[in-house]
Image (tube, helix red, strand yellow):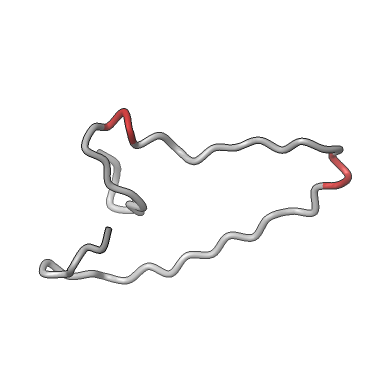
Amino acid sequence: VGSRDLIRVAVARDPRQAIPLHGSYLGSAGAFLGMDVSINVVSAGADAKVES
């Protein structure tokens, strides 16, 4: 599922366990300063060890 540009960030036994990230913010709109997100994508290779 997804396209070539999909970045897998989690693994689940059942698709219902893989919900999108979500959250909520409580406070005034003026108090929210913003959010920065960065990622580093590397190829793990076929024989990469998966840590749990």
